[in-house]
Image (cartoon, rainbow, N blue to C red):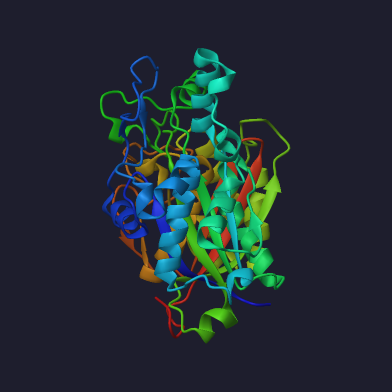
Length: 417
């Protein structure tokens, strides 16, 4: 079976406008969460989020093109441009049909739908933008990078809630192993910070409140956790078939060894209490990757900070890894950037690839009061140097969607990072 390598990374997150800024911020334990600045959130019960600051789409595409796409698609294009540059790849007439895009999302054009709903309500149907449909359509997460970059291979967007980002890696790996492409841009994107989704999530009881300091609101696995913090952003990884990567002497961050997706068939928002669906995805991912449980040294957890999710994930990890669960390092980037929904798992892929490449893992910040039921090693508050032979990225979403991807260390390989 052809191996799949990670050869490039791009990111736009609340911690920075590049993969390196994001990674450095995560290792530093820096929070990108704060009071909402993109609109007046004073009427909301929860007015904090993980916002992307200073993003200018004109750095990555022409202004006319940027005006014709939603913010989530702009993020996807920007990350694709950065990932290709990081990989040292240029799309040409000669290779365009052998390159594909698999960029997933949770909500697609939520911002654009909200804005145009206000237009039709306040100004009438004649004033609705004729570009509304292509601006909000979720498939533009993959289609816009394809159009901007001239990519003519497989182009796929799956809408898989909070599992979307991780699912992109498993789907991209399948396409590559079937020989349908040599290179895939894979990841997730989300931009939905607006009062409508924030109000709905707050009324659902899913969101954490600031309680004075927004940077301390996201507390995955902590006894005092009260919910997640809504975030936005994107991450894209260049996945490349081994033969293609070696032929061009590519620098390799990690190998995508395998992955799996499963369903809970339990509830529209809650995870199965014992984490059975998540555990099944982890087991199958390990099986498909050919990686033993004891080879996993790090898990980039879904770790949202909600009471049920963190407990279910902990139980799932214990059921899969047994005694080895006590020796694993586990952490949640959501403690620093919030929950990026469809992009959350893509950031987890970035973390796993760089953890394998650099042998360091980021912390879970705000983990001050251990929960007796969440009693594993969640790398509290301080990053750690660690031997990472293999890493696992978990992504679990509303509706019971579970996705898990396994990344393998490549430092012993010639040309690796």
